[in-house]
Length: 446
Image (tube, rainbow, N blue to C red; front, side, top):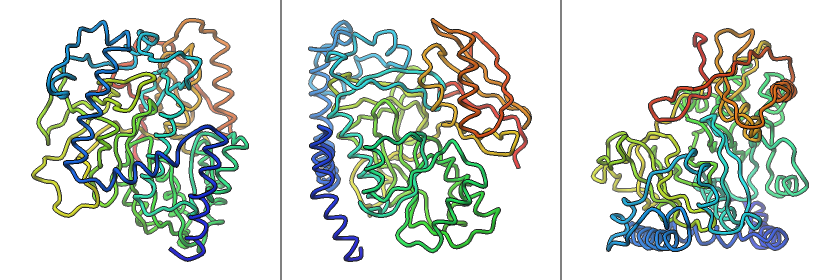
């Protein structure tokens, strides 16, 4: 790190973040320092911390959370045996029992709506402290990639309306925040050309948006943009994404694995595997009958957040498939001592092609639908480039005017007229993972 960058990094850490925490009543820096210390622990220390955190959570939940009080969970010696008495829950169970899952009054909590790549809307709550912890872990993951506070980063995202707080954060942290809504060739090229021959440059965003940037750069023979590394989140990083990004920008993609429900499950660093943040989450891999599978065997991800008290999520099934790495296959030399996920299977979240040839990633749709409570679930089906169909399941208070509003939002964000066929359905079939497939592309691969 150059001296100038070191000085700026020190200013951010010692002054900017603490002042921001004071103004916003958060404790991101305190949490970040804590998780930096946790990252240096031995495997035995991490396991002991996980066990203690798990016991404390289960004890708290059975004493204070109505949903878990009524499920007859009796404490046993091992928290790993105790948790097996708890039911596996999903979005529907959470929605049906929302008030009984809360440990605090709603008015004191932060409400989060999620759609995610499943297309099914969910609601959950967290405290300010719990949200601060999530942000601290995200910063930590970025640091694992080599990024340091003050390094320039190009970030794609859906929060296109940047308030003064986010704009201030972007300014201090040298973040160029660009819309993942607009991945048109002209806009993407304009952004990339401004980054030519820059050093110590990083990129972060949805995996599919990183791939689109690499596609457009290659198609336009842009060879003088180089990223030190890229950090991805939100959707699956396919091998051809990594290959093209490496070919075009000369760097690797470091993937992270988290859920909108406040679960920071794991991230890559020096290995192709994912380090599981086991003092923060307890991850089980179960079969379809909710029995634990052996390490090395594919199963359903079931995750428990160990530090949540506002709305404890115990044995939550997000719908992903994954494989834990067998202990005997752990590399002898590795950067960190967290347990390892070998592979996250997930689902192929295809890209929709607009009539003008622009690429609309899965989060283009979820960012619009997640706040529309009158639509329970949706799926985008594309059979030709002239139009696409959106299947939807209605909730209470649905009105036909809602479709016009959503269609208008999509056209505005895509910056073109989209031909959308709306199809109300009673059911959207799930994939093997149990999640509905949000995009079904029947176009032939290019």
